[in-house]
Length: 66
Image 1 (cartoon, rainbow, N blue to C red):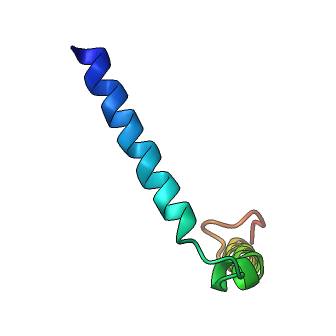
Image 2 (cartoon, one colour):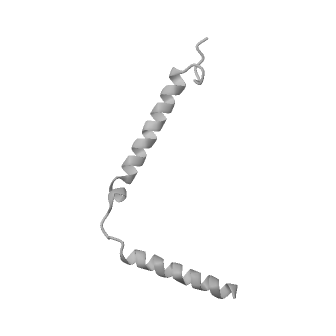
Image 3 (spheres, rainbow, N blue to C red):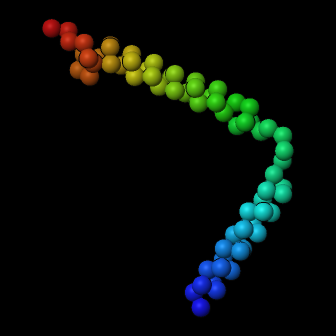
């Protein structure tokens, strides 16, 4: 009986996925418009803070003060 149950569950999941795709808007949303820009800005921010902390802090930095 397990194959029947699993096929019913699979069919229900496919129906839900199809229903979600029908109601999906076709225009670009916020993430489509600005997602890559925000990701790039966040990566640049993290790298700049990491670089500053590595250079400015002698305990964690790569440059030895003495």
